[in-house]
Image 1 (cartoon, rainbow, N blue to C red):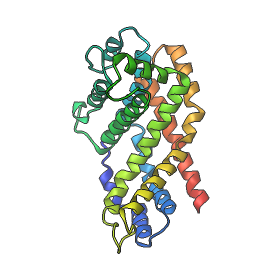
Image 2 (cartoon, rainbow, N blue to C red):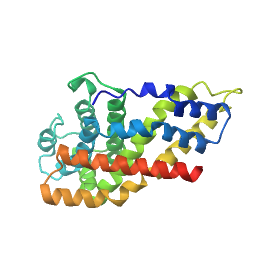
Image 3 (cartoon, one colour):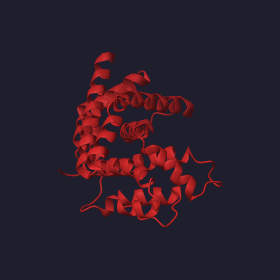
Image 4 (cartoon, rainbow, N blue to C red):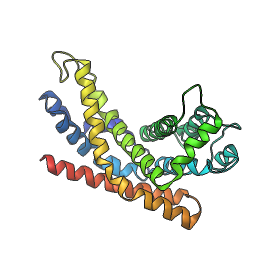
Length: 259
């Protein structure tokens, strides 16, 4: 499969419909829904890209590595180059490097970058929020916060957060190109506050569309670890494909509901 360059979407018929809604100053929900419809085909294709499976595998295995006495050694085994006693910044930087498009066999693409940001943002948020403080935390605190995400309910939470961020960042990537010219008296948003409100509506829409992840992620995680003892790239790819298919179906359902 060739690289996916999201910048090509604005020329599509569906994207022109989004622009028409912006020009008509349509409701935020209508614009977001139309954007999701415009993105559906590319999102389905992107589900097959290796970057997504790699990110899901790391999301699943970083907490498992935290169960070991030597957290750093286990992180290295799953491809994260970290120092001994890794802090959150070390883990985030290593995860970012692991998904760096320049480390792939060919040139990077827009989707790889969005996946990388979604993984880094999810790990940073979920582990960081469980730490006692940015300056008070030590390596043991980081390991303790990470290990909590290794329970089935922890993966349920992290996987939904990841796919919600992934969807929001994907739609935002396309929308930002048009919305940047829509702020002002003559635009769709009379102020930056109005634009912020739109962004919140986008995040809420994506959170609702990815709620379906909660229904099967915990069971998949515990079953796969019990059966295989780990999460392989193949298993992560299969999970990602199912997740994206379910998200696509939910987006389609939401589109029908708004019709």
